[in-house]
Image (tube, rainbow, N blue to C red; front, side, top):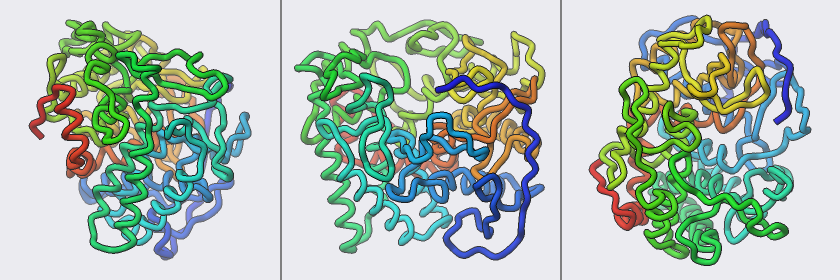
Length: 459
């Protein structure tokens, strides 16, 4: 992503109160602001549940009102300032859309949208995914929304992206399990989701039967990206789905020898007294960016999930707690860090785009880090939510909290990224009801896949 000059933003929203038309989940008639729309922002809430309802609803709106209209999928980015250096307003992201699809399920369950509205959107999404570019059943990282053609993520990254496609399929499987009514419409949609799922050739991405799965394949450059998926990072869901696939499965040896590095994945690192249990790639001693505790865990339930390498509840909770503790201890002495202002993960930054973490702390807080950690750190996340909200409209727009801000310098941008915004409603819902965890874990194939990998399940 391009490097952007830091700016100090003083953005005053113009609001109007009027009745809902039933199609806007934020509940208000929209008014234009920088080419976008906004609703009245409540000054206070009756209780924490009311606040969480509102936060889920507004952040889900990125996937609803903010979606690319042809595909129904999540745009890679939305910039309220209208500045798109890459001219990519119509580019959709497959991984971020998987999180957004999970958000659609949450929205139907919460009544933010009707079931019929959700089914209409899911049908549009499946229509698009069926005709969009795929590479051995796997979608690319980015697609042009109006056409369904691949937009290269990089010169050689112009084919299948198995990681992003796995995030996408995780969301689709949650939707499949939610669509349980005996109607022709829902049964047909389930069948079409299954066809997409069964078409993903996980075995192809073992590059000729190696004991590891590869991230990319390109029809032009083939395996030149050469990125084997070895843990630990955000990619565990790939191995879970690959083991679970009823049509293109891979042997358990891929997981044990590839992802787990024949046991080399284990670690004794315990930043601030919180054992990580697994080696965080490139950040072994202090932990990686916090999205590693979110992306694979939208549907995969870490509670009670264990194998010979780790207790996965400890993996995600201790990662979040050590990130929180780092921000509270604040070894770089950034103004504003504290119990109500914490969370380091990949996002926009004062230096363009950066994978913020304790080892790469630029003084930038990314709200999704704390908010998407609600299942692991409910008290700390609620304190952060109230702290962020108390900063008012300076870090807030139509789709909720801006992607990132610097409390020390006052820097922010009125911009959003799907991969950050679209995890917030699903993970808050997992904290509140466990909805997505329950749906994904109810997939018979997932249960079989986890057992195949040697994982004990008690959730």
